[in-house]
Image 1 (tube, rainbow over the protein chains, first blue to last red):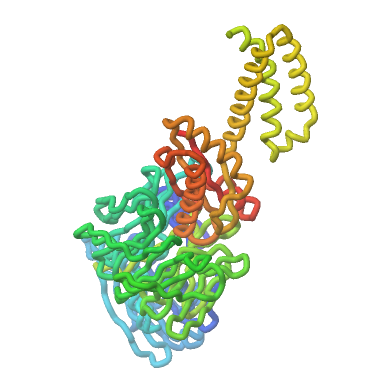
Image 2 (cartoon, rainbow over the protein chains, first blue to last red):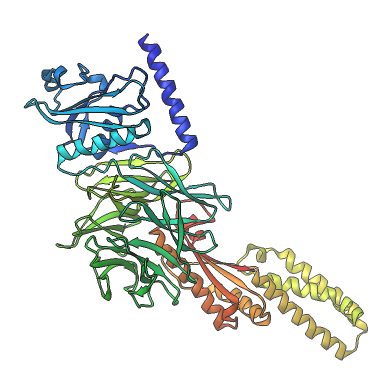
Length: 436
Length: 186
């Protein structure tokens, strides 16, 4: 009986994967490096009071979310001694014996005749037997994953002090085919790689997606006209505007923290220079003036400074200047190739691509004490994008010649990857927090 | 005129072949003795057929033949349309100069001809920097063509950065093929 049920479950799971693969081409998560000091937490399967099978396994989603961070270590279900669904039923000794520090229990209910699900959950400190959180959230069937992500956010912040980013999204570009028969797709998915949606598709390259601070719009570079131009697209309405298509390069868009301006690279005056485009007035301001390549601008979180890549010193290095322009100061000195910097959320460090021997790795430069640390050693790592909580960086890399996305925990060192089911995936951009 | 032109066809062909060989000095074909031999034979035949012509006619033929030969050589040189670069470099290699001069001369002689210079980079490093690198490579080619007689209005530069590699491998063999500028006549 049990065997039959689990077979049915597997079949349902497979059908689910197959359907999502066909419809969405979601990314699949593979944890590649865990952390030894991770906090043990038990996420017990949520009770089902609906009567019919639930479309989403909320506890499973939460468990996978927490595990990915590397900061928490969820207990596998097979090792659980009991499956309580509410605080009254918890037998704390069970969880103590299993070495668990925290326990999350919950259940899903739906009023007769209603389409609204109510998800109730409680978080306990096993040692003190204290209830840390007790809440109920409601939503439609389509919002069950959102509910699972928001519970993950609340639990993660309670246990680590760091706001969760499970309810955020990632934008990325997939590439299928070779030679002249290629298809580029700009997609947006949940931070766990699921529920991907097509934003724009082209037989010509798409690069450099960048989220507006509101997380409602993407700026990106599309070659659909045969040459690079910058577009801004509303991810909800699909409304799309071409914002820069001067002769030459129009690329590397990066939003000002207040969302009113785009820093970008234009070569209309002969060679690549950094410009700022005011999106309201369409006024263009040139910030750099040098015969060298100046590109990959990125605003500091306070909007006062812009870092960019320039080869004015012979090879690509990272420079910093006032967001109004002025004389750039070189900030990277280690190695002969440092490029495409992105600020940390506190503005005190930058993440960038650093060549180390024959490898291209992700590095972090602490701007206050000028120390560089290497974060990844895959070899072809590029396009770092910082999660809005500052705790993780998503980047593009290669595994066996295939382009995949990967995430590294900035402090924990944990790593997980997000390969596409088919083709290459590249150019990740982690969204800011989404206001709901 | 028609007949004489017809008569000297073998000579032209011979010279063209010969020129074709000497121009493609980077290709293994040159080591193939058969081509040189064939050219030599045709030349003798050609001269034999032109035996009844006056000296001035012969000189004229010679001049035309040389012209055609030069054209053929230039044509062969213009078949070279992809130019390669070193990693993170935008300097033209020495071997690019002769074919590029042939393209420049052709563009100077044909003001209506239009060329797109497509610049590319290998996959290493960052996409945006590589986009700039691809443009700078194409601009290096553009400058060389303009200095050698092409009109600026005949040339257009487009960079694709590391997109559209010709070789999808992940080693120097592939990368060296992907760091390129491709000249495309419209």
